[in-house]
Length: 89
Ligand SMILES: [Fe+2]
Image (cartoon, rainbow, N blue to C red):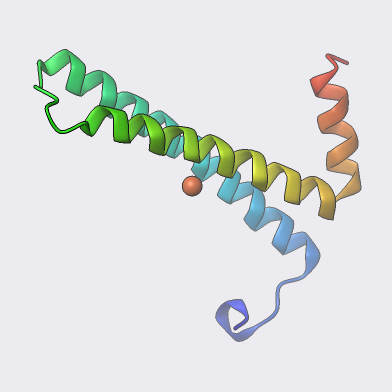
């Protein structure tokens, strides 16, 4: 089903994917903060809560990588710039 009953243009899809990538980064930061707070609070992690949060954080890293891959496949200019950035250009 298209979003809001309308198909998105490619530029809108790329913008949505960029937003989704940013959300993945925000989620990682949130989980890292929660983990830090739990550790700082002296929370007794008898049920593996912190380990689960760390696993979720790693999953978010995978999601971010997948989203960046997808964006780079749809928009060739982003792929070129990402490659330049990765090479330190
Ligand atoms: Fe995610």
